Image 1 (cartoon, helix red, strand yellow):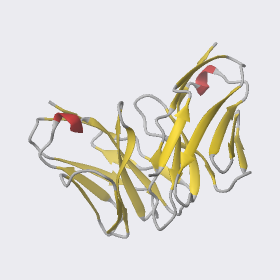
Image 2: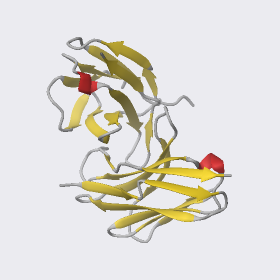
Image 3: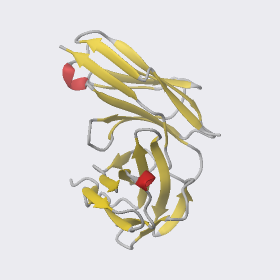
Image 4: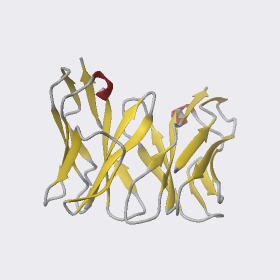
Length: 111
Length: 111
């Protein structure tokens, strides 16, 4: 059974650029969440999508956005990148409320 | 404000030396308390979900317990391969799979 797949795994961007990260959840999972992980702040919730609708949102600026497609795949976008956006971005998928599985993440470096 | 606090930040054990990791939480309407293991450069790996005070779950050398304010992850006779960061997260009530994470305990087991 395939796990949560995130692409790309590594990327380097320049300040001011934008980036799009992709997440394919486990087959059948309709809930997809995104998290930012940094050494200083740990894992912080960005947003959650369920059946193409944003169900919850964390305390991040509007530069961070996301969407979910009808096949449950999700993308997140960060516009006008800042140095502080350098982090590991993790996607998680869930079938129900009992188990939430994470992907390996996308490492973003902003220079 | 919802909060999850883990202690200690780091723990070094000798192989076979049992110990416990602590997770204190204040999460509104806690729906579930999650434990994850994270290896360097990888996404969190799901271990357990606990739902109510008094509940216990076991997996190999790990046992998680839950009270109304805390959760403990007991590691019995650890091996070097148990070395990792252990993350605790609470899921608040409501229609969401949002997780509020602690900052983790970095466990090092020496042979």
